[in-house]
Image (tube, rainbow, N blue to C red; front, side, top):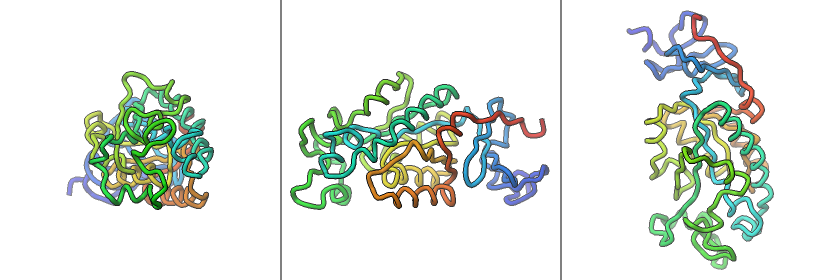
Length: 271
């Protein structure tokens, strides 16, 4: 067997191979190397749980999900539904820090958000039911004081002001119509065409759209990193706790904005 395809084989420097070929990771006692296959000049170690990991910054991106007025602003859909929009808004300062850190690292920023068709023809009954459990409850696409809920062109579908001012022309924007940011969108194609293999995730609601996108990224074999303090939800606290537990036990890694902002350079293997 070719040594690079010897899954669980010895890496020769104290590690164990996970996966094969160029997509392999190397597991050590003190870290996971997500980019051992080439001498990348921008190899960087991030502190995280369950273990620190090493990634190539040129293969990383930050995705900010659904930090929109309808979820995070007074008068938006969450607020008008009787839920606590300030709980979602708690993600905003962390998301701002994460975006600024991404700019310093010179890694792409992706803005993923609900921008539904005005005629709702790409939303099936199960998705509509998720957000309209009573006849008098306002669902996706229905009118509120400041426009239609999460509809392209509406105030509610816009990013909150603190993040809107951080958007740059070269940023990638992905409009979605399900909780999962990959479903029916060009997100996977964009990431693969840009050579992205590790995805940092921020946004709301962490137990719905963020977690659904994170899990799909994992299923597609991306390295996924939840930036804990750049996420929030209007759900009960245990919902976020469960997402964090699963993120570090199953889907990938969990870090914070401080650790994302202050990584350490990692030597090239064998260097």
